[in-house]
Amino acid sequence: MKKELHIFFTALMFYTRIPCPKNINHHPDYLNKASRYFPLVGWIVGGISFLIFYMTSFLFSVEIAVLLSMITGVLVTGAFHEDGFADVCDGFGGGWTKEKILMIMKDSAIGAFGAIGLVLLFLLKFESLVELIRINQSSNFEILLLFLAAHAVSRLAAISIVFTHEYSREDATSKSKPIAKAYSWREVLGAFFFGLFPLLLLSCFYWQIWAVLLPVFLSRFFLARYFQKWIGGYTGDCLGATQQVCEVVFYLSAIAIWKFI
Image (tube, rainbow, N blue to C red; front, side):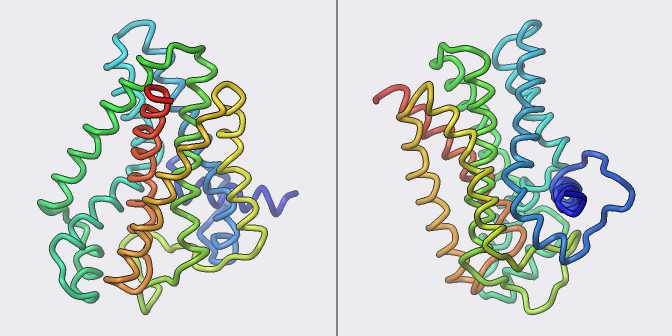
């Protein structure tokens, strides 16, 4: 139990800015095992984001409450995944060889592709969340489950790339933190359990919500194939970009389900 707590706090420290015990670090053994808790971290990020939305919705409009919840999510994670998305936009937008793409992604400066990509990503996430909340005339508990499921499923889609593809860089260097590159059946089972459990609860209210998995994992599949084609695998930035894209795809798919099914 103590070891599992250490692994969980390793995941929490790696993926968020939430304070953790001082003895927690980025030890490779624990970091590899921490991938099983990546979707569980999504519960925490999604739960905190929903809490801010819920509290501020009593004072402000839905739009402002959603925007504040998005800001909260960015602060909690330290823009970890958004940074990866921006780097992927810059790298694949400006590079034409594996070496050039990896070099651009390793650069901490943000370029035009990254800036434009982030603006469009945030706009799409904001508009889809607002529309989803407005058309879903349901209890706050169901909206909470929606937040949890979106963050958990998108993180499951991202971490699943680790299970099926090779790490792209020839060395272990990173401009910020290391990354999990190994796994066992415990990581796979843990990731899928924590990734799908909120969706299971949400399906008790709307069984059709399971349909979001098709577009989400199709997006994951094409992104992984694209990364494989150009850089021969994935990097931490690729996982961050996958999480962000799949989160937005989750919201858009949920809107289509509630409107047309």
